[in-house]
Image (cartoon, rainbow, N blue to C red; front, top):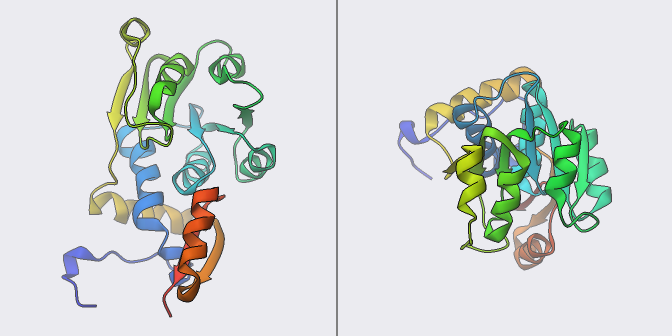
Length: 218
């Protein structure tokens, strides 16, 4: 493939091609949400929804930035695995449908500084409730719905900022790769499939993956 030099970034030194392939969307979205938008500082609290590609990178990056990370998932084993990657707490939203109440308990009633929302739908109301006054929500995905019925009173009174996140500029990518190098962070790949098994790879993704699913072309 021939591309312009401005369209390429230097991959981190310690990564295989398969690992580096996971960075442009998942890692960069997490990085932009945490650093460029969230401006996370050591000691602040971040909530990450789920344990997919963006979310697992967010756990690793936020922990390396010195933040306290809370993860939500419907799978207790995935919550434990996320805590091994640096999260301090996990909330099972099947066990606790009003998961925002558990988040408030974990943050002494204050809520988190930044919340990475990958679910969308009407759950955005719970995300607002789980975020501290004048806190931020990075709206990354819409796994439970592209539309939402939003309660405006909590949004207004809590002075919440919600920003849609769609990847990031190249300058962020360069900064992120340097950070990954410096902190020796490696992508979490659930499974690498050969190209002949691309269908199985997409089926794996549909079932849910812990981290990334990669298709190896050759």
